[in-house]
Amino acid sequence: MSIDFDKTETEVIMKKLCGDIPEKSSHISDGTNRIMADALYKMNITAVNRSYREITAETTAEKITRLFKRLIRRLTFWFVEPCMIQQTEYNSANNIFSSETNNEISDIKNKLENVENLSKSIKELTREIDGLKKQLDEMKKNTVTAKENEIKEIKISYSQSGEDNIIRYILSTLRRNIRDITYLDLGANHAVHLSNTYGFYSEGARGILLEANPELARELAEQRPEDIVINKCLTEKPCGNTDFYILNGDGLSSSDLNAVMGFIKENPELKIEKTVSVESVTINEITEKYFPEKAPDIMNIDIEGMELAIMKMTDFEKFRPLIIICEMIGYKNGLTVGEKNQEIIDIMEKNGYTEFAFTGINSIFTDSRITGGGKA
Image (cartoon, rainbow, N blue to C red; front, side):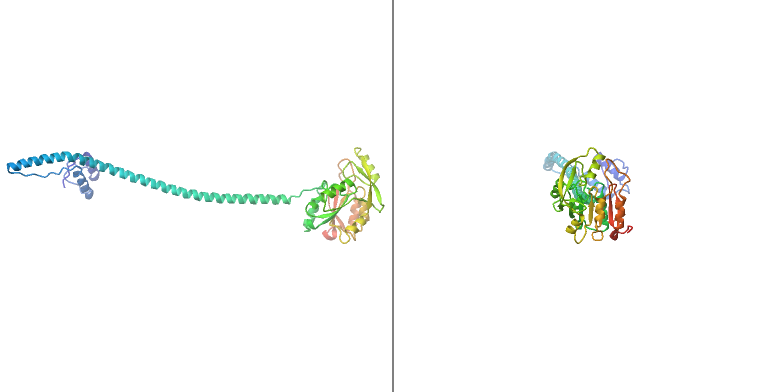
């Protein structure tokens, strides 16, 4: 098979396909892909149509006819060849354009596929983010709930030295429900401030409040309406009405004039603001009327100068509060350290009570028959 290279490009392609081929080579090496070589050969000879058909003539007329035919053929070739070249170039350009268009379409498809994959990834990430948000919201909710529970467990103390929280601990250890307990507060003073019983009232407990000062009794009735407020003065014996001396210092007013003068001597800034006549009542009258069958769970005693007398007058065989809070120190204008009324402790131990705690001001006694301990 003979190949004439019409274009340099064809020669270069053949050299790539067949190795080094001499110019105008008439043979192909054995390593050539013959199918590709034949196709390249056909491409070469058909790139431009140069078909030639011999026109024979013998007579003069035939020669003249041949001349016209050759002229017509040359004219036709002259006209057709540019069209063929133009069509070839168009086809080549169209092939390139089509190829590039296909590449663009393929590229767009790939991009669309990437966009679709990206959209799926975004949706998946959105689901994961929503899941994380839910987990975060749940964590926040649990954290807030836990903090709220912690806050609920923190109990505010209204007592002077935390006595109510100590009692709360005793009751919780004994598995006593705060809402079910009762109390007797002798010398209740203010409704909330420095109160050993208000903390229990705020949690649902109820009881009896004894207060001789009419103004403080009104405050108690207004701020603790579900408690029973007794505006009377506690005395050792029934005596009708008695004078009650109201001082300008909290918790120091008393019906005992000698005790009041002792307070003033200790602290000259104290003075008697007024004296009021108040109906008297004894501890036995209170217990018989308000606790005829069962003693209160808590009894608080803060009546200046009468703590020991109340202990001596109480029949602990009939009237046994579970917990008794008693002021144990005398009044001093300053901090009292290392002092407490030992006689009260002795009476309480004799009657089967144990000093559970001492706050520096008050002792908290518990019934040994229920809580254990004690010397009785």
